[in-house]
Amino acid sequence: MTVDPIALTADLIRCPTVTPAEGGALQLLDALLSDAGFETWRVDRAGTPNLYARWGARGANKSFGFNGHTDVVPVGDEAAWTVEPFGAEIREGIMYGRGATDMKSGVAAFAAAAIDFVTQTPPDGAVILAITGDEEGPSTDGTLALLDWMQTQGEAMTACLVGEPTCPETMGEMIKVGRRGSLTSHFTVTGKQGHAAYPHRAVNPLPAMARLVDRLASHQLDQGSDHFDPSTLAVVTIDTGNPATNVIPAQSKASANVRFNDLHTSESVIAWMQAVADETAIDFGVQIDVQTRVSGESFLTPPGALSDLVSAAVEAETGLTPELSTTGGTSDARFVKNHCPVVEFGLVGKTMHQVDECVPIEQITQLKSIYTRILTDYFT
Image (cartoon, rainbow, N blue to C red; front, side):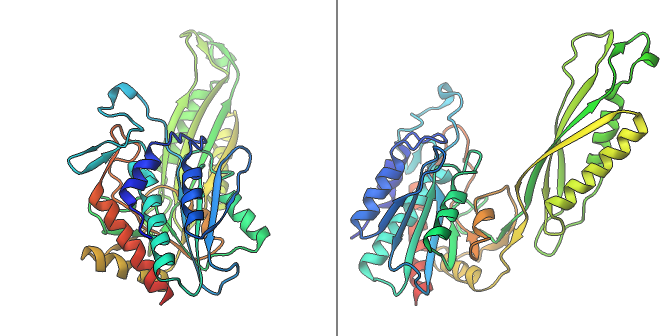
């Protein structure tokens, strides 16, 4: 049995799967994998569609897993597109559509590789696909739901590949072996409203907010570590919402996003920000409330057997020796790393989330070849 990853990518793109809509994508994969001998389960939770598929025995000594997502971000201004966003149109060897890069092509390439592999050279072990419809959204009931279900059912992966786009410019140039942690903190500075002509009768929250964000943004968290760039803090918004020029407002709000490396935990970053807020509150006689949402902790899969396996397959198919990197944003690998060793490898990601998102079709075929080689080498 041979599956064309280009045709499968097109079929998946034609499924309108803006988070959390299933759009027919998981139904399509479920049918395809079932026909190839995979056992499949829908692991939906809280309205989020998820699919788990396994070829081989539960509890096999070796089980290679793939994690990916079929949900996509909204198309934005559809009038700005030169193609139908869910049309999978091919022009001069390039396929266009929302999810073409991030990451329906990756899902299609691995599904095609897995089906061909188990039907042509059945391995001594298990091949697993854990596909979610909630990677681009809140990510609370997607891969986390799959991992929770796996634990209750005795399902396990001994190694996992996440198929997110990882290459900045050239196919094969980068593998992700870790990710920075991410959190967003919201600061509310509360003073006392009053007339701008009588500032001594008010407590202005704005000078306190200005000092707070300066203290946060000007602080160097670290200088980087062995595998990570320096941590960063970006103030992303300051809002007061005061249309009156003769009124000192009672409150001002701001938010900051922190991307932190393995020298920190979310707890240590939060504790530092809280200390800065407390100091500023005392200095200015205001109240400062801090609320934080943690998206994920920093993690690293140390270079070794898994990264060597993927690197060798990438080099064999592309001629490039990939860089082992921890750059970029978060991915669902931050959840998988608690289950088993995990690395990420996928396409060039230059057009992901953009208008006219697209992928050269030759890269889809190349990605399938890389994934096939990874499976072959893993089980031999």
